[in-house]
Length: 263
Ligand SMILES: Nc1ncnc2c1ncn2[C@@H]1O[C@H](COP(=O)(O)OP(=O)(O)O)[C@@H](O)[C@H]1O
Ligand SMILES: [Mg+2]
Image 1 (cartoon, helix red, strand yellow):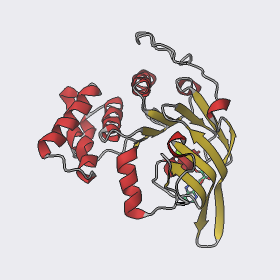
Image 2: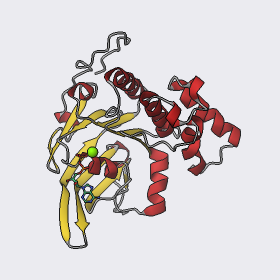
Image 3: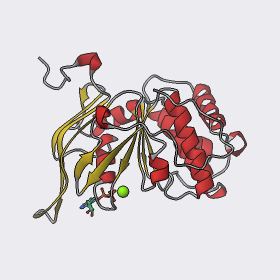
Image 4: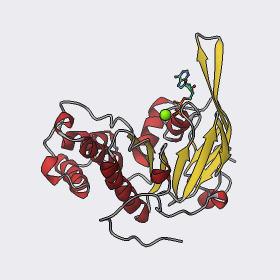
């Protein structure tokens, strides 16, 4: 039997973390334990907020979930496949195919147009799309984000909200099943945050699994479950059955269309 396959096969959660530790080693000697025995699952189609004080390990956990970093010990099954112990190129491939990641500071390439930023991940995708198809897909994503008239703008020529929408378009251009967002509204004003949260809700309604870090209870209230982390340990919400479904009650979304509350 292949030990690295999740035994529950197709019924497995999209994300399944088992006793994941992350320890940083400073100067080779000083150990800094940051994540301690993190065990959690996320099912397909969920919308989860991750909350906790500054320094509690949220970004460290998100980087592991997003395959940007590896656990020191423990297992991480993504879509039934153990990804915590795979290295380098293979992890990049998994990221490219299965994961969209959005950062607080957008992380767009400067002096590069919105369109070029969005289509960048497609150049790393096996499957050989033609140049014309790549551009078409990029344009469609930007249109979807309401940026049809901003495709040739460089990041510095865009507002924060527009830059974040370019970053979201880039994260989604490969149609990943899951989107991770580390404080995506942290650098945005409240009106623009509402736009981004409405967009996330729309994406989730279309079936994309979303996990986001936020300090804002209003933003967290848009998610259907909240995981709380304290000092590197999860203190509540690690599993679907524990999560309360809150709806998007906290945000002032006057002007936003009324959305059906699911489940
Ligand atoms: N590369 C690193 N090397 C050493 N310590 C780190 C590193 N990255 C983060 N840390 C430490 O890990 C803890 C958690 O950081 P982080 O995950 O960024 O927290 P949060 O996102 O919740 O604010 C902090 O104490 C931080 O100093
Ligand atoms: Mg952080």
